[in-house]
Length: 70
Image (cartoon, rainbow, N blue to C red):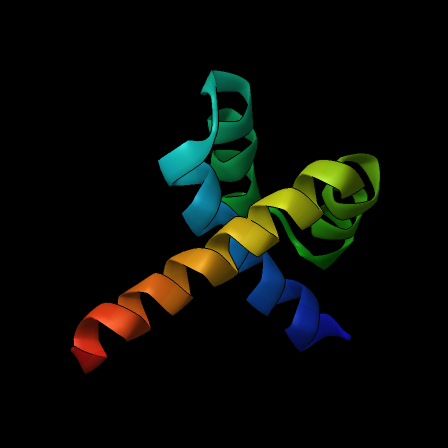
């Protein structure tokens, strides 16, 4: 569970840095310093946003894979 949360947070931060507004980018910056408990609080408080940015990160990864395979 802990490793999954950290892995997801890394992906979410990546997408926030590209697509997020100023508030979400500030939240992404806070995630850089958050421990496991605080990451969990961020995850549960902003669940819809977390899921949206996680999907965006997956799309970013898929695009990068497609480009590198061409």
